Length: 182
Image 1: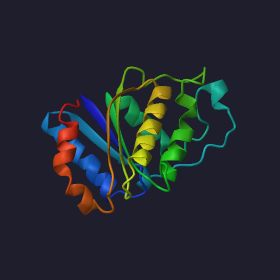
Image 2: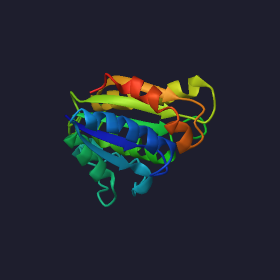
Image 3: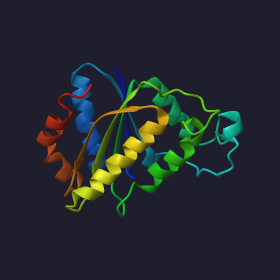
């Protein structure tokens, strides 16, 4: 199986990257072909709201890294998205990417359907202790997947994570969570 790990956070290192790496390691040990992309290290231009994609099925913007992420989505059988909480919601670069997916979303009759039948997994983390915030983040990932035809196959979240070291200290929990994934 081909699995894409998408870090929706601002940093290419840190707690979110560590969480995804732990899950990726588990998948790799099972023999899966894995790739990781970090949205925080990519150029993602804002959706212009022009709705040209409703006529053409394609976003007119092709000079940033969004097409690279779409290619990775097409490549993958499964997609794992990890996002930290920024002020109670997904980070800006993840939101920019979600907005740019209008051209491939099920609300767009002209879309190119390349995600139907794929499975998805959502992971969230936050520094605070409230689980509700993490649950909302996982719900947002599931909502996003739903519009792309990706079935949510698993999810998890971790509260009280300030640093990469905090996340690494919970590796046993992560391994238990993803043991039956993929």
